[in-house]
Image (cartoon, rainbow, N blue to C red; front, side):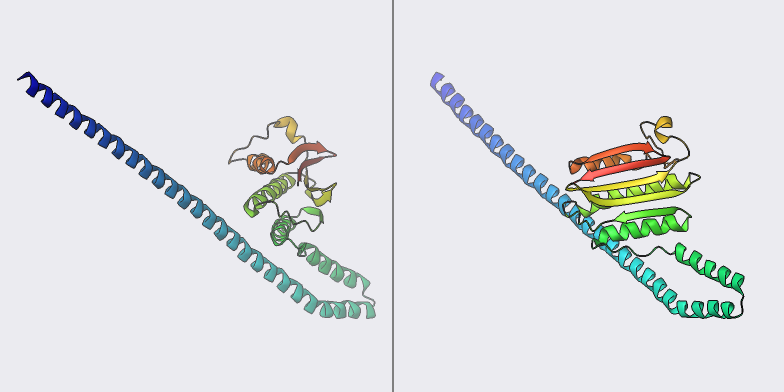
Amino acid sequence: MYLILVVIIIILGILLIGQINKRKADQAKYEEQDKLLTRYLADNLDMEKRLSDIRDDYDKQQEMAEEIRRIQQQIGLLKHDMKNHTLVILSYLEENKTEEARQYAGEILDKLNRMYTYVNVGNSLLSYIINSKLSMAKEQGIEIKAEIENLSFSYMDSVDFSSLLNNMLDNAVNGALESGGKKLEVNIVSEKGFDVITVKNSIDGSVLKDNPELASSKEEPGHGYGMKQMKAVTEKYEGNIDIYEKDGMFIVRVMLG
């Protein structure tokens, strides 16, 4: 009787050990499947992000092409009209109507000043952003000074570059519109081996004194709007960003490369 009991206990122990080992094997199998599923989802998310980036780049290329066509059409029409404008001015001068000739010439110059010539610096994304933003600023009566060199920014992802430059220009345009001077200056140049983007806008009073942290809200999209993105992009590419005020101008200077 005792021997039978021992045999039963041994058999139960063997079965229990087998069940435990099976559960361990199943658990290891499930863990491996979970890892594979997690890796698959991560790869899909990465692929979706890449696809989204490609779509964004394509949309920007389409917008840029449309903007170029629009401006080229404006320039073509202007060239076509210049002959007629010249004849009108000459006819005024022949009739000694100097005041009418001066007024007519002034109207043509005003029209020319409202048209911002397309900036072609070799970098299509840079050209598009500068052209679209400065055209918008010009249409809103902002006085513009720009010095743009042919810099590739090839080390930057196009989405990051677009976010950085768009935010810098959007902030500056908004700031200039809020000021009495309505001035905007853009410099994108190479200095001592670094790519330097400097954007300035006129201000009536100190922005940093009233808002040193450049905090912003959706209701008040001032200089603080997009500042976090600008700083994040600059830090990502191990660059420096300086924000200061000088001679009635609010200045953001980013050094990269």
